[in-house]
Length: 161
Image (tube, rainbow, N blue to C red; front, side, top):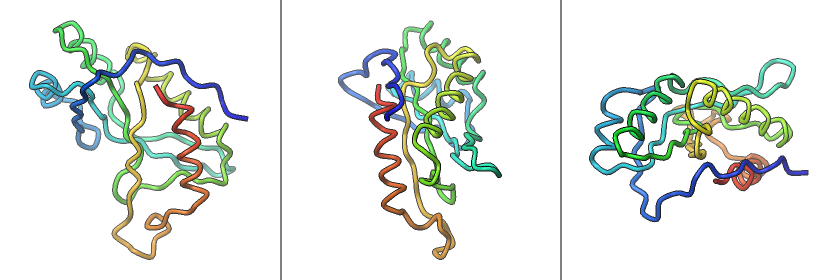
């Protein structure tokens, strides 16, 4: 069955102006973007990989304490923002559909709970799928299987805010 859906932290604004941070970026440029109208910040980027033995692993991403502190400063400054985490990027692995949906969901939930423990109230508001190709066209990371696309499609309503 489907994993339990995470309850929404808060509704998205009716008009979304999204901005992407760079790889691992958490600096004054993010706050400047919010002051100039960005209301959804997409932090970059985590990767979904499989450890030896088949356990799904969430790795990479920005410094979660910095993200939490940035979100708190923006909120305190009257600039409420929503915070998404991007999954993937150029040359990044795609989630392996051989790993069950429930296992991926447990890994993502655990990672999001670590963001909450770092101080990001409620954790991230959503996922931004940035599954791309690879410089090496023969790489499996340059192909998208039907099973892999189904996995992402099944994770989306589960994570929907």
